[in-house]
Length: 203
Image 1 (cartoon, rainbow, N blue to C red):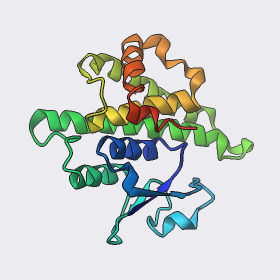
Image 2 (image 1 turned 180 degrees about the vertical axis):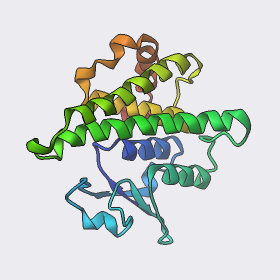
Image 3 (image 1 turned 90 degrees about the vertical axis):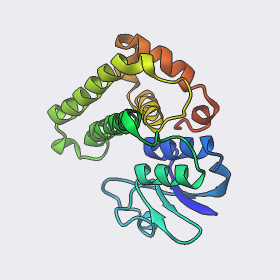
Image 4 (image 1 turned 60 degrees about the vertical axis):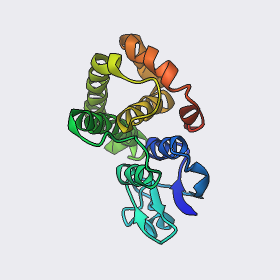
């Protein structure tokens, strides 16, 4: 059985679990407790990933894989899935959308860490605002593309974007991102109701 260092709050772990669920591999993973933190290093995770970040996966043969992009591609290859278009413009579009979703998660995490991990005297509001500006720009880009999105988590780019939007709901509800992005909100209402998404929501 594969082993995965797991955290219910991580959008990147969610991305892996959505892929695993869609590909029929979720039951082949042992989920290991973790406490990843930007300052307090969890040495348990470091056994699989020297960066001590989740997700980190070890295969039955002892191969350690990290981060979410590598793990998701491994799972897709293992299951002979179709989450990654094989060639042409469709492939590059999918990978660019994955980068957009992952980048939105990165920026949101940095904004959150500014106030949850730094002592008050070292917090920098301008830094956090700059990260949230990236989130806003990503949301605008998604709004312009969303009419072409599938309503099912059948593409790695859409899974990444869906997990990013779910993270905003979880950690940044005050942004009320739906108000200015009605097309994205309508798409996400359907996409997030898919069983693979519903089963992996952060808590």
